[in-house]
Image 1 (cartoon, rainbow, N blue to C red):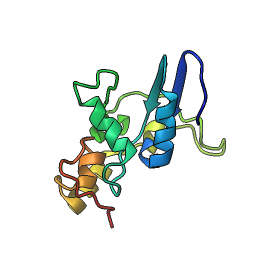
Image 2 (image 1 turned 90 degrees about the vertical axis):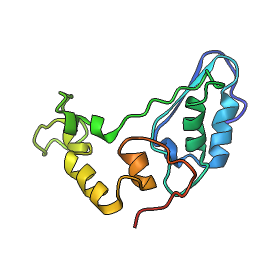
Image 3 (image 1 turned 60 degrees about the vertical axis):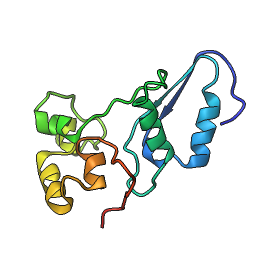
Image 4 (image 1 turned 60 degrees about the horizontal axis):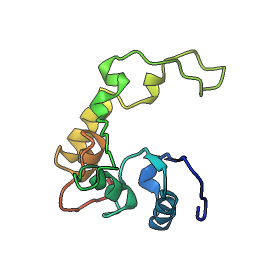
Length: 142
């Protein structure tokens, strides 16, 4: 991911929480000139100072006007809000036609997660309200 030069680049990273530091540096190398990156995902709960977390923090920093972080809380899931969403196109034809909302987190997942970890647990903070825990202390849920 180096030495790609040209105008109007768009780099899209899905599951950005899994970006290794070396890959994060490679994607950063692409962001020269008129380039943009869309990174989608949750920061990992087991890697303090991950590339994903750093990008999220840049989005909250007024000195980094070129970076925007848009948190999307689990409570905004169409499976919870009842928002109408398209039909799923990923399941095999043998599966009955259904909304993609059934593949998204529902209220029972939120309730179970809050009971298991408590609302102040770093895992819950990242996954439910989409907030970065302050002061590190990230752990992998067991």
